[in-house]
Image 1 (cartoon, rainbow, N blue to C red):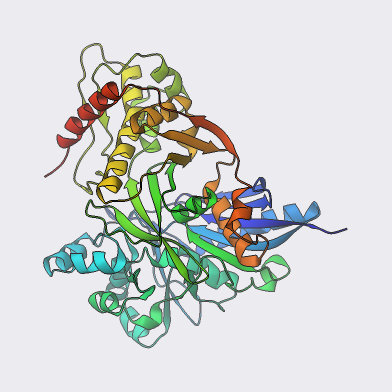
Image 2 (cartoon, rainbow, N blue to C red):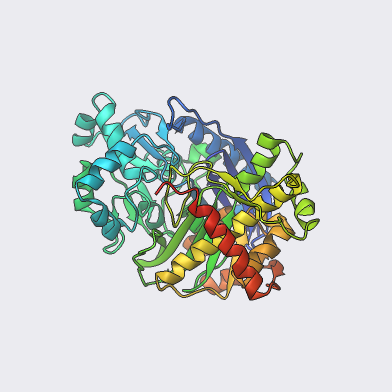
Length: 496
């Protein structure tokens, strides 16, 4: 009997490591998960144990491979998706990291970024990499490791060290140290990659004093990344897809054409607008990034990052204690006609795009003696929609083609009231798919494409099913009035 092919995605995130097996119909079959601890050795520092990440990834993948193959399926290929920008440097001969992994949230290199800005590098970095000069990205993290870990720079100059984001680190370990590679989407988040030329930038490496021998080979997002060491899963399995988490979720949403857009609503929110082969240089502090690379051809995207989305609902629960679980916010919001002028700006860690003001702080405006838990809960949900509209307006101002609908995924999309309000404020349809594990699905479908299980993008598109669509019903005048109040509230939180 012919075994049913399945695709396994390794989804390595900031707080957990998961493996999910998908059938060729795009539906999940098995899942295994391990939580991942973060450490905070100093204010503004965030670290992971890279070796723990590797162990967890192998364990959850082994769980899933064994489970599906015990039921008569055969794992055809593995895809990897990962928290982007998190940085690992390891010894080539031993495979041991020379320091903890520096997480994307880490701010320790803020001073380095300020020095580079003062030296006039910011516009150069933006033109080459599409990114802002910010500690968020991998380049300054890598430079910091080379400058502060004893003997690191000397070892790097002797080609004794390797650098990678988490995808590269996992790939190295899964292949037994045989493959040191990444895909173009992850490379584009390092601040060392020239997204125009599609290669590592000599100028940016020189600015950060990064030896080129440290860097992985950049490959297509769907293609040959080698095979797993036979000892790990009992036989070699092909690794044929890699993408950073937000690019993977865009691929999972089948947003393959220019003008298609997705937004993932989790702790934060990340909106990516496919711009096709057009590389739009943002004048409104959005990021120009590589969505994916297929058959040597780059697809670009504009990206806007919202720092706090679902995290504001967690704050209502854990900080204020006005709800016991996130689902309560839907009924609280629906039970009101309005917030009665209350606005919540959730700048707990500053404001993301298009402001990029890390010193802004959260605030509640418009409260009266009658303001209660319901108004605050509704204001928190409304803030997510307002922040998304800011991204839409920034993209429009950059000349990007506006989407006809917004594809959404993430835990917050389970809140029907929030999705309807989002549709009303954006004045477009909001579409939620049946499968909400879009990051993992994107990695799996990339692997399927790279392995030849799927022949083309159209074959992937037909597997995506819509679960719910919300359409706008709010009057334009009311929509604009609400949004004007939001802009006033935001202006009062900005540091400049």
